[in-house]
Image: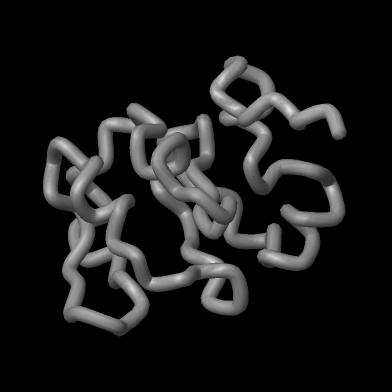
Amino acid sequence: MIELILEDRCIRCDKCVKACPNEVFDSLPGELPVIARRDECHTCFLCEVYCPVNALYVSPYSVPDPALSATELAARGFIGSYVRNSGWAPVPQRP
């Protein structure tokens, strides 16, 4: 389930909004997207996959853990972990 949007990372491109098949987000141009319909999230991870800056965290669980803060999720390496572990992460370019 979509758990959070990291405001300090989000570039407000709305790619997550466009990628979501269930229209979970609301957005206004230039503003941080809002998780407006969390209960409609089917945990497809498309918002996380399409986010170019790893500004989203989608929990693999149906009930998010409120004890985990954005800082703790980042420290544990959970932010962007689906993209990394699924092979969607960009391959580093060699010089």
